[in-house]
Length: 108
Image (cartoon, rainbow, N blue to C red; front, side, top):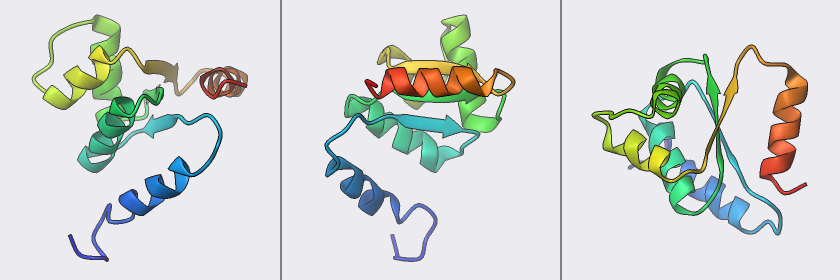
């Protein structure tokens, strides 16, 4: 992958985050396949994943699978759901709920 392609910053971004001595979490809003792959890697790394339900695309596919506890054709979605690390937040929920959930996920 060239240095100017979509998603090329991901490796560097997460290397920087690994250096922080604090809680880590991933937030998935809308998202396409690149973000879906990043979300999968983060749950493999043991990070909690907050999916914003109602934001569209991959986040909604993941949310629907979590809510219905059903089979999906996507191996990526299946593995993320099986990790048990997914927390759902609906886009219309109050901001205070998001703040509290993130604080809980980050251990604060």
